[in-house]
Image 1: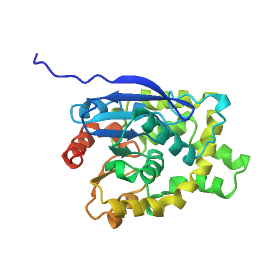
Image 2: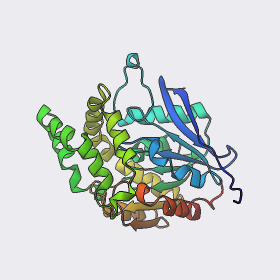
Image 3: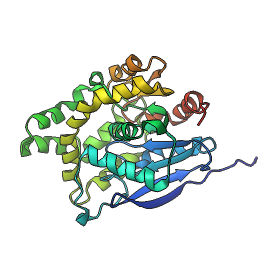
Image 4: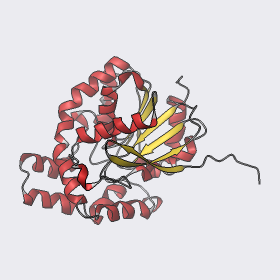
Length: 293
């Protein structure tokens, strides 16, 4: 059997912003850095198959955001569960690791958190991959209806609808499988692990707070779009076209502000990386990988 060079993944913690941030790292530090930012309801676990496919070309860093995965927020930290707070912690994480230049892969929640980092340090961002990472009102689908109702009235009744429809095991599994042509291609440990972590004491209250605060991201969309116009970064927008949360018009909208953006719709759902890992890795290499650091 021919020898194949491997690039082991390192599983580590670092203290940042009073938070013990868990992260995955692979690839040589002298390679261009690619910061992988997960979304709801998952963690850096979503990048477990992508990382080995890119580790020969990139230095890959994938943190778990506070409230997700294995990142630990001490109770006495008094953490404010908002997207501004997540962005602040991400900035502190990047500083703790000494990252000065990086491209970003953003998905779902990772988009507004990563864009806050980009606004804070625009000179550091070398490229952008948006996989169902929304930055336009055009991209908000009908699946946001219960959350919009919660924005209008943060009652216990409306909160319970979100708990039942989105935060439950059935709701999380649906997010992984909806719009997927071959559901047997989605590993069951994905939605099972997310669901188990969701059941930690107090976690569903944290998620409700973040859903309520998600409206703050819409207010920042014009600033995100101005960043795209001003920076004109190498950009790959690769989108599961059957995503009920972030619909295809949100992908097409990127080209309004960055005409050079490469936009692709693939036959998958919200978690397109679960079904198209190899293809997405190939397109990252082609669109972002040839760019100078």
